Length: 253
Length: 253
DNA sequence: TAAATAGTGTCTTTGAGACAGTATCAT
DNA sequence: ATGATACTGTCTCAAAGACACTATTTA
Image (cartoon, rainbow over all chains, first blue to last red; front, side):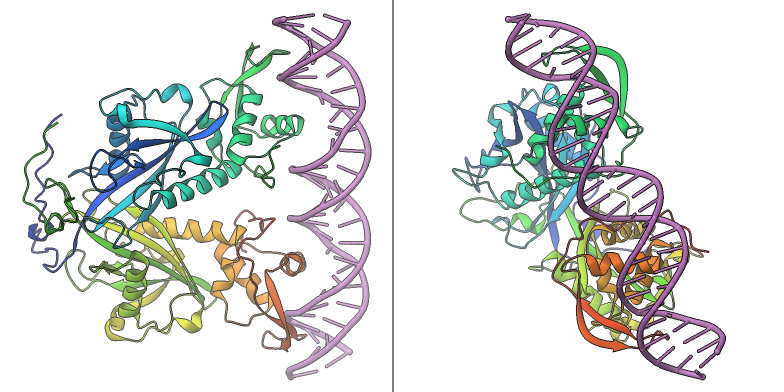
């Protein structure tokens, strides 16, 4: 890796054309944290890491780390993901979630974190790499059980879940959980597991195949789900879903 | 992988129970910026300030400033708003928009800014105070004309507008533009100006009065809009609008 | 054959869009 | 009276919910 550009970390000493930052600034440490979700073993799961240092030693936490000089925020997010989980490919979906900067959220000092939401299919999330020993999947329903998540990560996780649940209503983001080629039933299962709700297979089929640009039929079929062969689809160009898919009241027998 | 040695910013000198921030951190300056929108003179307008210092001296910019020690992000946003515009009351609606941290977005050094979206009625936005001389309203349609906005504020403004336009679809946020008591026609005018679209008065009336918890009738009437007296309403408890108000394709003759 | 899943069609209900008609003010 | 705006009602159409029926595989 080439050495990073030399920006003086002392931001107050960085004049440019006579303009400099005011000398009485609070310097904050900036980190990124990730809510990486996937569907595996018939459940919505989130990637957690076990903290190897204080504070919150040995407690589960969202993967993340400090932003480096000259590094963009999203760039830092995918780098941390690769380092902590050995993820080769960037996640299929990545978006900024929110920024958390309550003064006392980190006992070490002022640390502000920019949280990202990432969605990926199971095949792209092998968990194997340098620090990978400490990373593991946890069902979102029980992620905060036992020793609670470090820092304010329980809040960040809750916000990420709510974002994911609402995002798949009006966008094609749910396909980010799927393999490159998938059946309508597999996509429906994603919705059901993310929403904890049952959807009518026939109405769902009509909705997703009837929305222009959402799904692209490949012409090929699979029997991997059992029963009559189902057509395989790829995700289409449409990123917004209009009209939106309506989320039922959560009810999964 | 080795990190270049760098002078410790003072955030690293904040030990707590043996835990300290790593010494090779990049310290960043953290600021907040505001997209404060209001409806006045029959147009959607945004509050801008004229920059009094380099860089971008004399260019229009979004109001904002650096976060102080021990200060929460939203807290910093309302403080900056009060300082730069003399706004007494906090805005009726305030939400975090997004965080912008491209390395070169500020020529003075690494400055990351957390942007907020604020909505307020005209009555609460008098622009009178300490630094108020430099602040002014600009119609959003022409805000980026002439000398462009400083930094990446044109992007932030565009994101804020899009957020406001979509937010009023599925939430009661549009009432934040209204006075405490308002008529259905006044609320409709808000939607029309924010969306640049014409809405059918009768269908709009049916929609907003038929959605439980959205509007609370006061029993009193006004003739300030001319014609038959219109009932005055207050905003209700409902913060989400379901089903959503559908945004037509922008078309205002 | 039965069982399982894929896909199509049909009926009902909800709600949005379009627009007629009446009500109550100012002038 | 006229004109303006407030409000109610009615018709039509699009789309969601519920569910019957047929199609094609494996066991």
